Length: 395
Ligand code: FAD
Ligand code: PHB
Image (tube, rainbow, N blue to C red):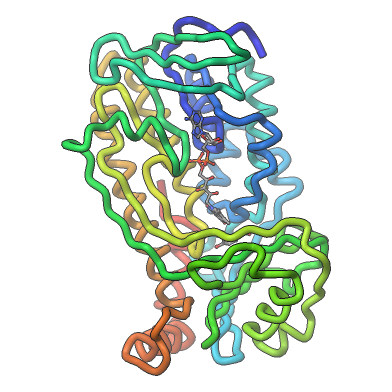
């Protein structure tokens, strides 16, 4: 890592996908930044998270010169499957929208971003402790932190809060200004990674009376599966045998017969919630990605929203440095939130349609869910709407 500057144009707090990509997009447009990350690179790379890259996110990465490995090693998926009542419905993205998604792990993408950051000579300070912001709504914003036992201060024009769900930068937006919108879902996903061939060449989202299941993948010999668990579950409640039995029971017979099981190489429990903090700007501070909004993973939108936010933010910042006008920066929050809410809606809809909700045995909600799926199975227009949202709305 090069010497840490005392002054830069933009300080980016958080070096996950949002922060790293923002630094690169700014660099491509001639804007200087420094990225401050709490964790080590190995820790960030060790987090198994997203796996689905929207069509437009893929194009963004390609335009930024970041898609070499993704295009070589990622898998183009022209559709997904929904399972219900022991039947599979193929949602054909290619036919319905002319687009596709790319299966490429967040871990691999993060590695590509780090490589590009190093090649571009951008400073990414990792293992930075006690990151704090100063004068975010005044004339001399600064970020302080401790790195290698030394106290540092960087003054800047703008600060980007890309520090994820537990964001500390978000707390610099006063309560009097901030609005929070939240929906908690009363269950979790239990995820398992195994070195086994995927059960099918495309993803399967399954609605079963006992609960949701998802079959995903990373490559020909690395499968990612999820099952719905109870809100209070931990990974200790889900030994491998229980996980595989549950998954098998929730898939159509023709699929479960082909399922290859094996020891887990990673397991996690993740809660499901929808959450948005508005506005995304306060003074010189801008929020992007999980720091500003969380969606349940059902629609595979979190990483993709982090990408679209930073595309808008990089444009707005570059616009300011090119013209001296803040118009783009003033519009950033509304522009990003308009796309965010559409993904919040879609993720909520998929979550509501595909999961078993406690108390839902034979009641009104279960009937509606059944009807929603029967409608999708029978209506090409319904399928097109789902496909349009899943491959990603235009930026
Ligand atoms: P993060 O990835 O959380 O990065 C924030 C960074 O900030 C972290 O590196 C963190 O260490 C750092 N940080 C935190 N606090 C500080 C601080 N005080 N100072 C400095 N740095 C700090 N999304 C999809 O689009 N498709 C999917 O298929 C998908 N599947 C998912 C499956 C699971 C199981 C989970 C958990 C998530 C999934 N997501 C998916 C969501 C996706 O992983 C996130 O939306 C994405 O990581 C958001 O990126 P980010 O950079 O905003 O936040
Ligand atoms: C994943 O592969 O981890 C994955 C895929 C689709 C989702 C969520 C997670 O909706």
